[in-house]
Amino acid sequence: SSTLGAAAADSGRYFGAAVAAGRLGDSTYSTILDREFNMITPENEMKWDTTEPSRGNFNFGPADQIVSHASAHGQRMRGHTLVWHGQLPGWVSSIGDAGTLRSVMNNHITTVMNHYKGKIYAWDVVNEAFADGSTQHRSSVFQNVLGNGFIEEAFRTARSVDPAAKLCYNDYNIENWSDAKTQGVYAMVKDFKARGVPIDCVGLQSHFGSGGPPAGFQTTLSNFAALGVDVQITELDIAQASLTAYGNTVRACMNVARCTGITVWGIRDSDSWRSGENPLLFDGNGNKKPAYDAVLSALGGE
Ligand code: G3I
Image (tube, rainbow, N blue to C red; front, side):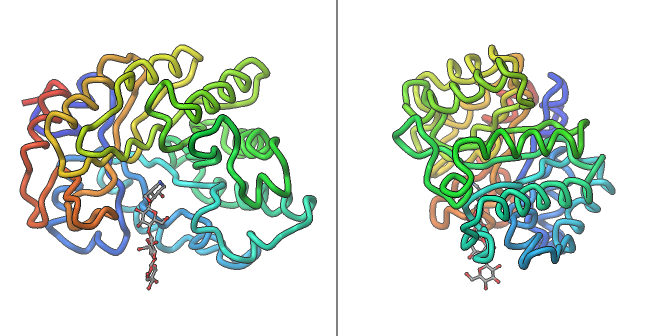
């Protein structure tokens, strides 16, 4: 196959991109999107500050634009994200009462998931809940007010709302098997599986430096998979788009049966949050970069 999405599909995987609603009207952008990618993650539009800017007032307009685009072009969707300390409106971060926050969190999950029921392949139910360099959760309003159980509560609520959606835990700096943070997330997933807490997948964001994935990246993917979850590379970008690094990343996924898909965090370098690092597969004019060919060939395409 000669596109990223089709080549990934040949091995039962997907190849996705983070998409910004405001760029869909740019025909260079949407042409590449619809030719190359068969999974979409909204870059910002499903985050809490956009979807529920004040309590009980939901705004689905920007994300709906992306979901309609995906459905018109045969692309599946990853929902990003329901519970995260980032892009969280002030009215949530200032809640100090556990009963109130529990009901606000569960209402947010329920209302957003119900709006998109049947249209989302996988949800990042909880994003970035662990602290760097540690096996423990990071400080956040959810952790500080609800305690360790907030992640389990979020996943149980999510399963009850849309039993057909895959439920993922998503994080960064969990790519190196020997990192404490990786071990912390691994222990949580193992515990969830042992106790029957619903979880279907782990997303490894994979924002890499020019050296690419850490040694042991494939071991991390296969060790998570061995717990009985799918793994996905969910936000891939690599400083200067080193083709060796991109090829190594994709090959690690291809070598793990339950690594079911890869998403790059943007389309052109000019769309990237890492300004000046040129970390993506297309240049600012929408031309394929050398890393594109490395990825296509690692996927088994040509
Ligand atoms: O929409 C406002 C606009 O109204 C305002 O005028 C402008 C002024 O700064 O800001 C706009 O919001 C920006 C938003 O992107 C939408 O463009 C924010 O400032 C900016 O901080 C925000 O950055 C996003 C970042 O998450 C914030 O946490 C990036 O686009 C997005 O790529 C990035 O994505 C995250 C993943 O969700 C989670 N993993 C890490 C990844 C990279 O940071």
